[in-house]
Image (cartoon, rainbow over all chains, first blue to last red; front, side, top):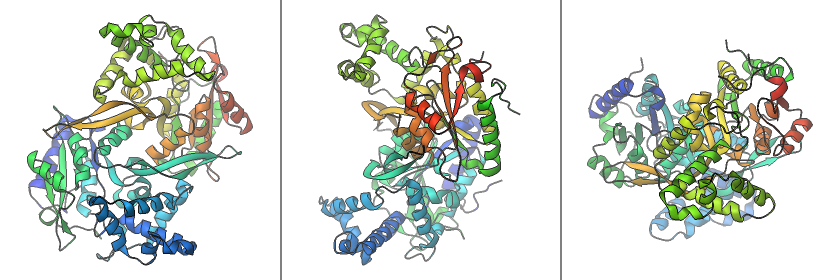
Length: 305
Length: 305
C-alpha cells in the first residue's frame, strides 16, 4: 500500500486521508479526477521558472549561431546571462510598461518557429539531461517535491486519475513528466504555441510550431482547458498561486465535495519562502476553508533523492 | 479473447489482425494510440449528421418559447421541419454564397449561450433518450457500426488506447460515447464553442457556453488537436471523408508503420452508398495503399442489436 510517509501528521495529511476515504466510498472511479498545478506545486519555481532557464539557453544558442542578434534584446541579456533583464521585463509589465515584455514574447514565439514538435521535445530532453538548479545545487529533474509525488501515487492507488494543469508550456513539460511524476503526456495540460500540419507527397506529415500563442493556460483559462481535455469536474485540485484560484473554485460543486490544496512556501531553509503572487489564493483559502499545506510543517522531506 | 466476429475474412480484416500483432511485438503499450473519426466512421451520418437533428429540434424549441422568432430563418425551417433549407444553406456555401450558412451559424452559436456545460449535457442526454433515425427506424444510439465497436474492443484487448477525433461537437458526443462506444469523455476530441468561467462568492464556479467557435476540429486541425490532447502520434487511424485525410497522413512516421483505415460507404441495402466528400481521401488511399474497408464486403453485420 502507498503511504504518505513524507507527510507529517497534521491537518493537511488528515484532510487528504479523510477526503480520499470518502471519495472511495462515494465517487465512482472515473469521476475521481485530480488536477495539479506544476510550477511551485509539483516542482520548484524559484528563483525563476525552470522553463525560463530553458528559454534563456535557447536564446543564447540562437545568438551564438547568428551573431548579428547578440546585440539586441533579449539575445544580449541571454548571451551575457543577465537574468535581471528578464526580471525587469516582468517588473515593468506590472508597472504598466510592456515594451520589454513584448520584445521578449516576440523572441520566444519565434524561437522554435517551424520546428516539428518532436524536434522540440528532443531539445527539452537535452536540457533536462544536464541543467541544474542555480542555488539548490541539484538537477532540475530532482527539484520535484517528494510529498507531492507521493500524493500522486496515493491517489492513483485509490483509483484517482491525476492530471497536470499548468500555466507552463505543455510541450516543455511533456517530455519529462512521465519520468519525474509518473504522469504521461496525455495527462499534461498547459500553455501552447500554435501548430500547423504540413504534409508531403508521400502521404506523411508533421506538426510545425507557429510564432503564435494558442493557449495561455492560467487563471480562468484553467477550468476551460480542464473541461476541454477531460470533460469532468475535478474533485481534488492543488495549486500555489493566484493563477490557480479559478481551478480550485471549479472543483467540486453543490452536492459533491472537493479537496482544494494550497501549497504554502514557508520553508526558506529547505526551499524558498514567499507569498507574492499568491495573495488572492491564500485569501480564498482562508475564506472558504481550503486546505493549506505548509512546506515547513507538513512535509518531513521536501526533495527526494 | 475479443474476436472480430462481425468482420468477414478478407484484406481489411487481415490487415487489422496483422498490424495489431506487429504492434504488440514492436510498440510499447503507451504508444499504441488509435484515433477514430465519428460521423460516418463509427456511426451513421446520412441522410444528415445526427447533431443537425439535435440542433433543429433545439431551434424549434427556442422558436416555440419565443414565437417572434418563428418567422425568421433558421427558426422557421426548424419549426416546420423543412430540412431542405438546412441542406440548401450548405449547397449555397459550396456555390460561394454564405448568406444562409452565416444565418444558421449565428443561430447555432447563440442556441446555448450562457448555459453551464452540465445543463447542455442534460439536453443531449434527453435527445438521445428518445430520438430515432429518420429512415433506418432505429434509435440513434443504435446507429453505431457494430464492426467498429468490435474493433475498439479488439484494440483495447491488445493494449491500444482509442480516441474519437471528430469534426462533430465535443460536448454533443461526450454524454453518449461511453454508453455506445465504451469511450469515456476524456478520450473524445471534437469541435467546440468557447467557454467562460464564472465564479460566485461562495468559492464555486461554472463554465458557461459562449457564442463563439473555439475549435473546428476538421481537416488539418485534427492532427493539431491530437497532439494538443494526447502528445503522441497515432499508429492507427480511421476515417471516411476528406476531413480525415490529414489525420491519416499524420499517423505513423518514417521508421514506425501505421494502419490507416478508410470506411467506404458502398452498402445501400444495409446503410447508404456515397463517396461525395471522400474523393481526396479515397484518392490518397489508392496512392498510398491505405486499407479500404468496404461496408458491403468486409462487414458481416452493420448495426448491432
